[in-house]
Length: 364
Ligand SMILES: Cc1ncc(COP(=O)(O)O)c(C=O)c1O
Image (cartoon, protein in one colour):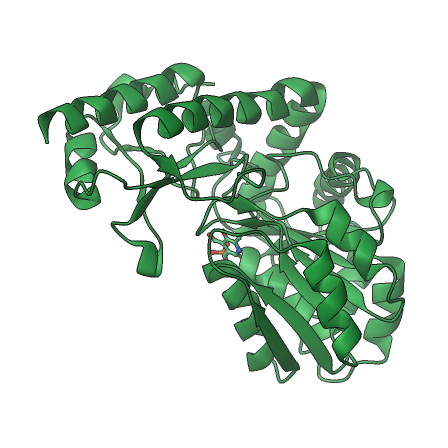
């Protein structure tokens, strides 16, 4: 999946966890002629996107295509999915963001902190849910700041034992990197992903799967706002349209990407796993993994900077070779660095990156 135009490009290749590399053939889809978003041509595009998103998530529930980044999907879940009291599990920067999204939308949000690098365990979810009168729980499936993939199915199983509690899932950097079969999992009420992550197209879209009971609850919730009102999304979705003008060009890229993934899902998901395996193996030999064993992310690897090298200098060196990766997030800056397994980068590209890091380590 390497980009054939690589030799001609003048910007570094992205080994960061989003936006990710997009190959030319997908970028080209964005140059198709513009269409009117109330024209019949748009409904044809919309129908394909809706159907193929449902196929990807293995669900009969609607999957809305929002013109926003992933945070818009989180905001929809918070505004329309939480009645009053929400319990937010925080084990990194993005789960903290979900807590803030809930609180800033006027919900009574309670946070439960888990040390960064560790996973949220189902037993903890049960214990905390038993303590209060909550109507929703937030969880980030893949914590991009720490490289931890939380055990979603097990957590969903626990939440299912609390029938009035809705499960709101940020799958922004997991959906598309690992299979998520919405209808086979214990109930999930909102699940969101972003286009610039594992779906490997440019930023601008969020895909949001929503349960039937979540639509029923939304009817009873006031002040859902307008742009992120799930009921407005649903009304338009039935016509294969969107409530306001969408980013049609990125939708064209999504159309091609979904066709490509669905044509060979094993190859698509397998490639992520293979790159993750290779980087983990390398990182274990040369450094250390930040994630708790058994919960390492398939989407990216967060590596402990056990050698105390300057990650900023490493990135300077990598940039000279036409690529760059992510420094640690927030307090983890310089203490960790992150390599993505998402996007149009091949195993050979990944090997090249690892070779360059080895070369840098040898020099420093
Ligand atoms: C897990 C996770 N949640 C939320 C976000 C925010 O997404 P966006 O920037 O698309 O709004 C990110 C972005 O990196 C993320 O990785």
